[in-house]
Length: 503
Image 1 (cartoon, rainbow, N blue to C red):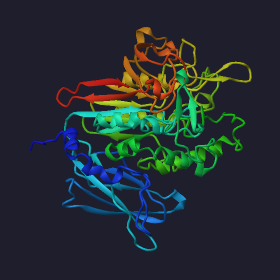
Image 2: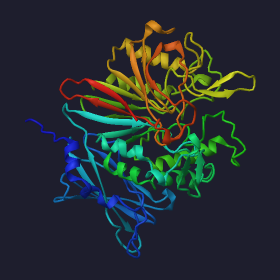
Image 3: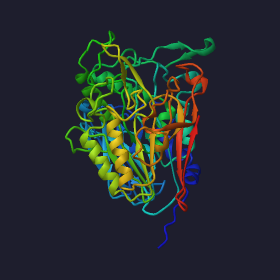
Image 4: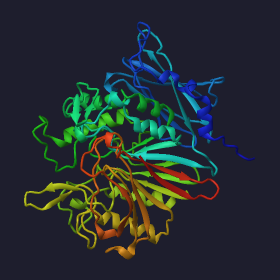
């Protein structure tokens, strides 16, 4: 039997605003007296062939109710009871829909039922497409770095327009490569930017200072969801989230020394609160293997694509000179358990393309000031030494050697973090460490944040810059148009993969 896959972009264009009308318009619409309110919209995440994680948030103790159908008119809806949410979860709720048909448009709508009165909220609708079981065209977008450097929701330009630009590409899903919030980045009422122009922001109490309390971390996510473009994007485009440093604070690691803006000086306490808020607001399926809400995971998206989502933050040792001779201890970055998991999953993958979603680049030097001895301290993998792998580079060397020896083909690295876009090609002929096969790494971002770069290369793994675009000066505003997202397209017939960097 042949599988007919209607073009997702044509279907959505035909449905237009009818599908998403409840999620659009003014965020603070009035609900009938006593009804729960759903002001933050809906999100779908970690979509596979038969499952999708549905997320939403209300304003009181209430039960999440989800209806879904393969028809936009909900002619034969399936109703699923979700969990009760309370203040302990900041009234966020998620439901892992199972038993979905593969390669189908799934239309869903969310309501909340007040646990005391039984009153129902108005419905809020969304759409996703389940992953295919057979070869077909795939398009997804990625990027990172949202609401950084004080650049928030600017009403003068209509908010975070880059999310509308990504939505208009009609992707099958969106990979957020980290820095989903800037917990260390207050949003002032206005900033003076290039050529004396004024950038104005919508402001909130939670974004008036660095986040220290759990509610302040949560408030960073609530702030982003005030943006109309982002909420509409979330309702139309399924998500795959990972995190990086700014969910907690800049260049967070166990050795982080917090500055005078912080009354809380315990980085472990801050990172625990930030992790809880992230897991509450991320449309992410829980992975309980380590008992602490694991973030690294694999998303299987049909025979052409597996996405391996990494966590380069939770298991690292403290930032230092990164020149050690041992991958354990001070050289830990992914950590032994995650590295072994990645090796095993890559080896067992039967997908044509294996996308490694990294929250930091491999061969770019990302500094983190200097240590007490005046030595450069490093935030990412590279250490500024072009020779044989040292420090965190040892884990990457082990991984690349394993990929080559096991003849694992068609790996592609996608990342963000550095606030400009680039295409890097890695080749052993240019490298100090040569036990690997050539591969590509693409960098995108920022998504409504200050633009920086470019960063210098580290020659250990032989990177070369094939393309890059960065601002003429650091920390240029989104008005300067150095905002970038990436797009990946896989042809269903030829299996050819194309990467486009867009601004």
